[in-house]
Image (cartoon, rainbow, N blue to C red; front, side, top):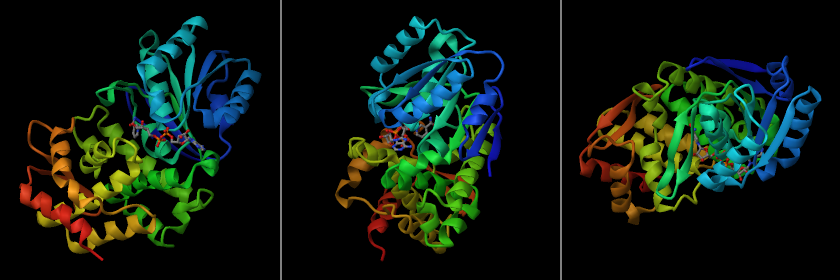
Length: 360
Ligand SMILES: NC(=O)c1ccc[n+]([C@@H]2O[C@H](COP(=O)([O-])OP(=O)(O)OC[C@H]3O[C@@H](n4cnc5c(N)ncnc54)[C@H](O)[C@@H]3O)[C@@H](O)[C@H]2O)c1
């Protein structure tokens, strides 16, 4: 079964979730033949060829652009190489960029499309769980600079997103589990059914990329993101709720020098936000425990080094999403009801952090 979710942005676009979805891309491109640049990671080389050859058989002029793995792709040097490739192939506004890979590729391909001729269309074909439920949906694109992650970028919504779950078969289990952290996040902020699906078999279905549970989780998580993004494309209001768990997560990523998977850091950050909300009288104890239980059953971490608290606090205070000098957190009043906690006392913050380590 294929599901379809429509996102309202500067233009509306569909996100398809299912298996064997190349025909959806082919019919989207039916009509006029175009030039296509398929930007992909090394791990996707063979599948990029198969995909590209099918599109070439429809009459499109297909160009392949393999980029380095992971964050090494999100650099101005790689982007410059891609600009040269589009220039050499005479890419016009009728032509298209396709991002085939994890979030690093969908971010890069999206920004390539945003910047070429002030904007050409992009089709995103995310191949990691994280990219499906998060990076490829929502229109944020960008690259890193030596000063930090995602500092250069643009809002540039895709024309189409195709989440072909077949790609998940080869994803390393660690990446799968890290992606589940963002899925669970959507459960906590908006769709408790996601949590029930995970809890029903202690996370077994969620951890199995071939299960029907994963298909439903992906669809539900995308529905949450689509709804939030449609209401608030440019992050003026409730899009902030998607940052649940992210304030501490960014600080942990900094301490770990970005060698950690984002989802693992987000898992700890959500547990922390729950403890914080409890300490501030917003959230009851069973809901805090539910965070810990759901994350643990997926194999996600729920606590972190106690010796680096002051470093983490310093990093949180410098986070680009902090407004002024006041720390802000997305918290819950109950599962499915996000709110904000502004300027909690330093003792409250530290006590919440210490509690992460002090529970059976
Ligand atoms: N734009 C946004 O809104 C947004 C949101 C969240 C994250 N992001 C970005 O996404 C990136 C992280 O995404 P990610 O976790 O997908 O990382 P990634 O793109 O680095 O992919 C993780 C690893 O999986 C490999 N891989 C990809 N698909 C595979 C497959 N099907 N089988 C086997 N291996 C495969 C990749 O080669 C890579 O080694 C970060 O750069 C982050 O900033 C962006």
